[in-house]
Amino acid sequence: MQERSSVGELAEQLRRELDRYSPGGKLPSSRALVERFRVSPVTVSRALAQLAAEGLVVTRPGAGAFRAQARTAAAPAGDTSWQEVALSADGAADLVPRSVDASGVLVSLAAPPPGVIEFNGGYLHPSLQPERAMAAALSRAGRRPGAWGRPPMEGLPELREWFARSIGGAVTAAEVLITAGGQSALTTALRALAPPGAPVLVESPTYPGMLAIARAAGLRPVPVPVDADGVRPELLADAFRATGAPAFVCQPLFQNPTGAVLAPGRRAEVLRIAREAGAFVVEDDFVRRLVHEDAGPLPRPLAADDPDGVVVHVSSLTKATSPSFRVSALAARGPVLERLRAIQVVDTFFVPRPLQEAALELVGSPAWPRHLRAVSAELKARRDAMTGALALHLPELVLPHVPSGGYHLWPRLPDGTDESALTSAALRAGVALTPGRPYFSAEPPAAHLRLSFAAVAGTGEIAEGVRRLRRACDEVLR
Image 1 (cartoon, rainbow, N blue to C red):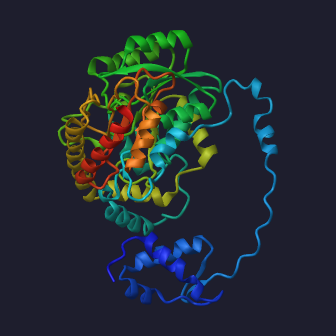
Image 2: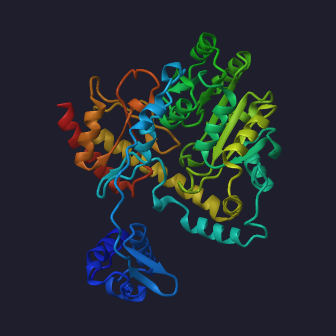
Image 3: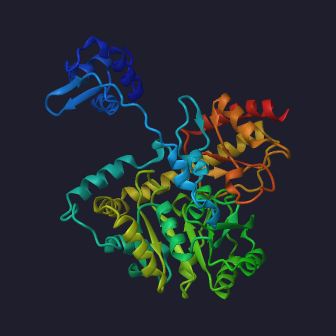
């Protein structure tokens, strides 16, 4: 029998064979399954764990796996319709709706069906993740003295110091809080800076997850247009005057989704405008560690050039490692830091210490710079493969900017294109896309797609994905 590399395939085969065993009957040993199906012990273990999660088998350490006892009849479903009233009562008095739309976030988190090429992913493909280095770091971290104890509420001092050095300027470890991923950090920041019902300025277009955070916190996102050089300062000033917003959320480096970098001449201007408005700038520095090989020197974070505490800085390790390696930092100066800290403690207490210790082990190991160099080279190769394939097969898609960092492109579709129809046609053709509409907090000026080149297996899959996208465009654009 040929090698079965898929956990799902093995789980399905075992599922079909369960009727051979009576309830409580013992399944073949893991060793026997390894030999029979010619898979690794890890594959067998994960397949059995999947069946156990479904309630089909029971595993007993040292004894093996057994068919689960027959399930008792399920209790009749209750009537939850009362919740519709409870969740919306007095809704007319709400400044903003209390329901939360997570669709824009789920697009980049949901795994596509088997065989579908993932142009909608928001994380590195497993082949690009430093799995061996992370596993080694976690193993070493678990053996550190006190690794399983309670960490300081603000985070481990050494990790805070590492993030402070990464930000640069006069930022110190005392001005850094360790948080559980960038999404959590942005949530804490917006809750600290703006009361429910307040306007908050956002780039347009911008990351749908940030829009979801703002709306879930009861805030009103107000768009400020972005061009090839980042946010437009004159429109930012106009938006502050018109709204009195207490904060502006931006991504100055390789902005999501446009890939724009805030121009040198605009950096000080953005800080000056916010300071004069008595407002904060929330800097989401999310992909600084996903720079491409040909990028050249990067500008410093805005926080590094901010002595007055205007910037609340968010930085994360997640994008450069794994979706499950949720370690990030919030940096701020002045009284706002205490408010951030209080919200962080109330919401989550602290980031688990083993994960913080593992982060220290990882970024302090020789494997870390090697990983960043390898990812930098691979992302450039994938970006070039995608831009070349689009130019060859889809010249009607306009690509005004090719970024030198990040993991996606932002092509403009021909006028009048139905994004939803194209997304559906592409999925039928075997490629998952992210439509542009969720990236705008108001009516979009044109139809777009965000095409990720980081979540796929390699350049060959990129070429095939673009060919499939061509077929979808032929169906929708004709």
